[in-house]
Length: 126
Image 1: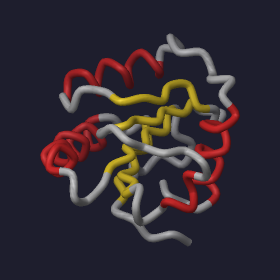
Image 2: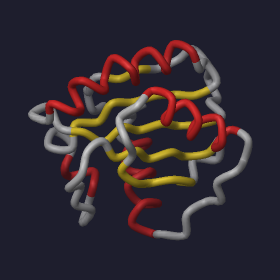
Image 3: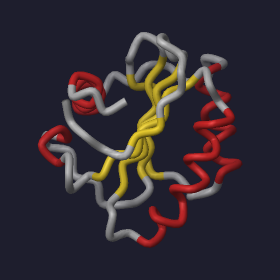
């Protein structure tokens, strides 16, 4: 099992997986983490995980995260449905999660993001 700061909710079958791909050295990420933590508490239907890209670089494969924070959202079937850099605002993250829960994002066809999602899930970074 990979150990990582993680924010899990009690649900056994989350409707949404939310991975924040960040770096410990990034001041923006450190400022964003308390907002991410709070939303994890407020959204029990989703599973939130904070992933340090340097600590878990092997799980990212060929993916190179250059901008922070980068979010990866996966649906209940563990398919990535959003991947990209977002503004580090709690309201933005909450709206994105609500849209994903409502099915407003189609699964991504990008095989790199699919592999990263499966790698994070398999490593139990949940």
